[in-house]
Length: 165
Image (tube, rainbow, N blue to C red; front, side, top):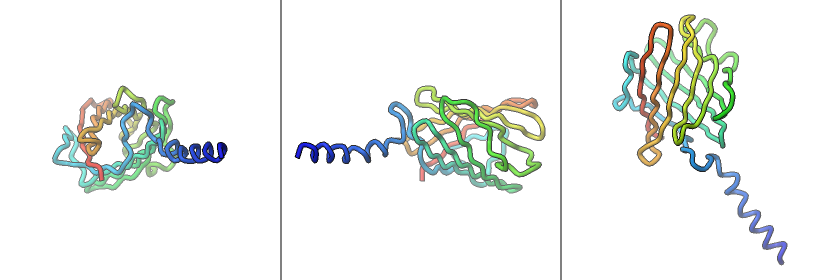
């Protein structure tokens, strides 16, 4: 009987251990997030027609799927990184050959409850850096991304706000 009770207790604890995808003390960014254009500030950049981010967070591992639609183009790409890990190059074929904008590598790190994602990019042959700061509010239903863009032609900031679906 003692062994049976130990087995039941162990078995009952397994779903909890497997279900823990977010480390304690970290924001839970998991979910599908749709851009709220009215609450966003694009600065010098024209707003997209549509944009969404799908975030899968498992421990310190992240997969961020980005869909962006503008009048002149549609983009879909995926960022994969480990928070606190080394910069990860994007997979070959993430952007079409000859695309004017490409993400070369991505790195993530936690600063308190804020996830900071740094992307090394190339735009029309010039290298630059995008630094995005992801924070949650609204009881975990609103994701705000403050992005600083630094390119050889200059620097600017955007603030994009997403609603959880």
